[in-house]
Amino acid sequence: MKKKLIVFVIVMVVAAMLLPGCGETAAPIEIPREIGTLAESARELALLYATELSNGGWGNLLVGVMESGLGTGHGDFEGLHGVLIEFKEESETDSVFVLYPDGAGFIIAVDSDEEPDAHGRVYEETAALARAWSGTSTASSYGLEQPRGTFYWTAFAPIRNIDGDVVAVLGIDFPAPRLRNFSEWNRNSSDWNGLEAW
Image (tube, rainbow, N blue to C red; front, top):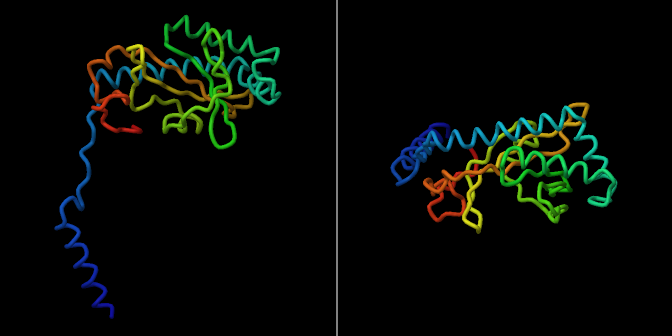
């Protein structure tokens, strides 16, 4: 019986090797230097601002606003909102926003738009967002083109409370005009390489 099992395993391994596509792995996607630099710049900026918010007690204030159920009607909301507007203007990014856990996903808690109409809207979870929620700053593995023809690259970093616990995630839509020349890194392009995570 043992001999038959060994023969069976050998036959299956040989058959798998002979079938087209079996045993082959996809070639790794080479990341152009310009794309790597762009993603790293976005990640560093997200980390800088998230660290600034964490060190200033902003995370605790955010939790208080979100747990109150008042959202934009909370007395401290405008202060939170104002800080993100300052970050957006200072960095000349497309958008700075904060995501807060809500059940099985994340919602936009605060964003840098002048009129914070996105508050409470569900945000699509990505591998980069999940990684930031676990405590590591990271950039998305792709950029996006907006309907108005501008390009951006999103990066995420954890926001912590005064105890060091991750309570939210800061996101930045970093300007990426170079993406125009790298359509395979634009998720909205038919040429997109399909890379969902680094």
